[in-house]
Image 1: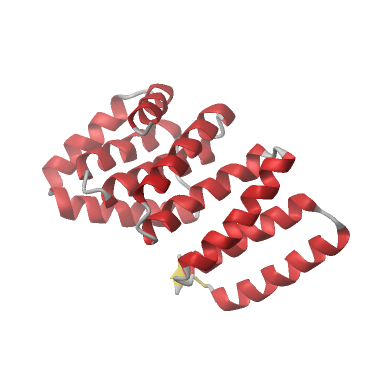
Image 2: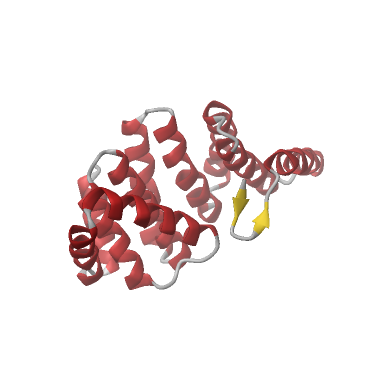
Length: 194
């Protein structure tokens, strides 16, 4: 698989992440262990192993809840949304999304907010609510430019929604998102998924 212009070998990444996990365990760095499990979960998801991804993310989540590290927690919750979608656990994906949106709102970190809105868009699209998904994407522009992997995910979702809605309906739905303020949009999202 290629991401941008860099070839990525997820099997090698899995090997290196497993080695880092063992090192973090050996030195007793719980934050490092949690982050390694989170990254292993992401790699398993990208390797199309959602059950293994869920197992790693669950271990990461358990440690992060014990240590109360909010920064890494949003990464785990964000990764859980598409994993749950792969496992056809829509209700769990909605619950994880609510947590992502709440954390993004509380942390007020732009990249976390973009991640949360991307996940909201992906979940709405998976549920066949394409106009709502496009509205979520419109909110992203109120935050700023997506970076790295976010850009790839955003481009993919934009293409899928444009195809599903047609150009005119897509642009209208996107415009609805652009006129919402980010805080208002996140609060509305939380109330819709409760």
